[in-house]
Image 1 (cartoon, rainbow over the protein chains, first blue to last red):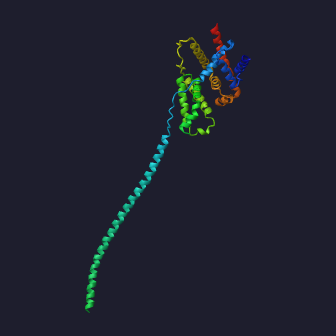
Image 2 (cartoon, rainbow over the protein chains, first blue to last red):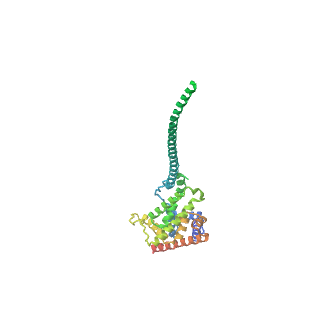
Image 3 (cartoon, helix red, strand yellow):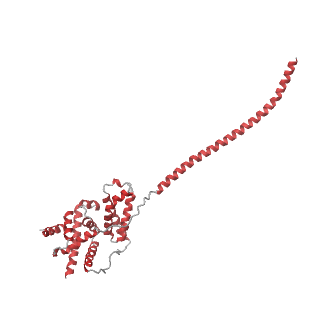
Length: 139
Length: 169
């Protein structure tokens, strides 16, 4: 009965119409010790398939999370550039402002000096005024 | 997807990738290289991997394409197959020798099959994939898969019968 079944399954097997579980039955049958003599020739086939499935991939794969370095480097570069331009501009502006301040101060100093000279002259005028008052008072 | 998660997803089928690669490329070293390559490629895609509904099928297809490319370039550069993984026959026990002998025979027979039949046979008889999965993996019609599988099996039977009769006679 079983042998009959196996033979039928074999026939189907070679027509590729067996299911996975039927093929498992065949593999099981051929993995045991006593196989019918006329079926013996198929034994290497099924045993080979079972053996082939035992093969393992044993090498280690280096899965270092090699993130896209370049991406982050470029981000850093852009950030640096932006900061550089921003602060550079600020620095330059400050320099310009300082320069303007110095110039203004110089101009004011010039003005103040001239004013000073002016008031000096006015001092004579005061002298004159005082003399005039004296004259008026004497009258 | 994190590394541990990735490994959990990939672990169950990495041997299948290796076995398919070895079936096609024959040499163990080359198959190992190919598998590593595929795993690294997968890893580089790990961020979008959640979108694939079947990572295993995707990886198997990748392996298939990668190995076929390898074979093509090998043919183009006219390199000969080198398989160093055949052992010498210096095995002491008769029985062991016989068993090993038959494995080697099978290997050699399978090597002689056309690539497509090799793959179908590998996926079906070794890895026990269902037909529709094989269709998807190899991008073949169901009838084509059946025909290829049947041919491959019959070729093996024929070769084995030859050897078997030869052994008796």
